[in-house]
Image (cartoon, rainbow, N blue to C red; front, side, top):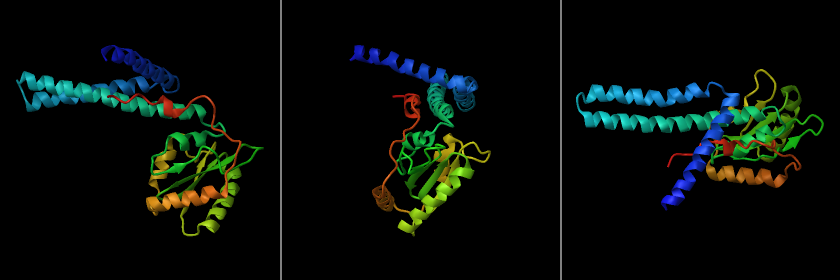
Length: 233
């Protein structure tokens, strides 16, 4: 058992280092974020130990150890989130980038698919769909001037099929007001909840039965799901 554990440890450390190196290439400030993430909990623990238990060496040591452990945990959390954001930044602008987010970045309460429900072979503009408690969310990938008619068409189809289900629109593209890739999950959570979990499954099943677009894949190369920092055990 000891040998097996020692063999796994270098793998995790190497993976974390690769994640850090990848993130630093597109996010130079990651070094300072990680340093602050570690030092702030340690500093807080030292201050609290001196204030609450002055002169008690054992309590001070326990506070410091707790601060170090909290710092390590916070470093892993920050590294994971910044790495995911860096990965999305690298695929931003590529056809299928929204599909990568819907495949890897959504919570279990949402049902998303990496394949678009509509796209233009000429311009590579696409429309993606996510189904959750707020209803149906259509996401346009490409300039809004070109994706707006595509979104309106898909919304009309959904309203005709499911008239009582709310339909929301999001835009991801080169426009100034467009939504960045890494903010898609947060934008989905802001919509008010209208459906139950059972209704979400029914809506997705009904929409999926209508059909889907084939022959369209997410960008090759970086998989944001694999670039998250390993969770501490």
